[in-house]
Image (cartoon, rainbow, N blue to C red; front, top):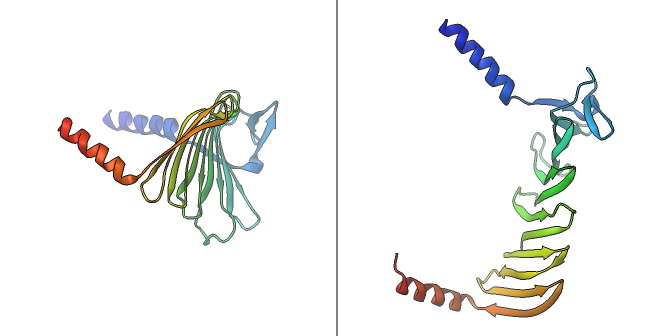
Length: 188
């Protein structure tokens, strides 16, 4: 009896947590819904797209025939058998909600969140040792954009409806002094 229960449990677990992987040519679309080509059922799983040499260029993840995630991969100058993601996009209601871009080392260099209308709402990026966070409203910079420079200095840019109002640069040495005096006032 225990053996039957255990085997049943394994089968149910496998069905719940496994995801079908097909080649992109094995699915087709009708009214923007993905179907498995071999049995004409709505597709839930991952569709992989490869070039003539078998190099992976893209993976699309579907749930009930609707794409919920796309992963793009670098295809040139990549060692054989190695897959390096270049971009990852999550979707809701067929519109992007989050997009992450990666460099050839696989490191994240840009993170973007979108509003339901498709406008950018938040972005964060890393470039040349700088780390920047920006907020948007109706697709325009709005609020405080903060950049931490390679030196540790902090630059705050204040925006309203896309217009730059003020820039405040705080040297790293002043940031440390502020943190040190706060820790003396409120020791942990």
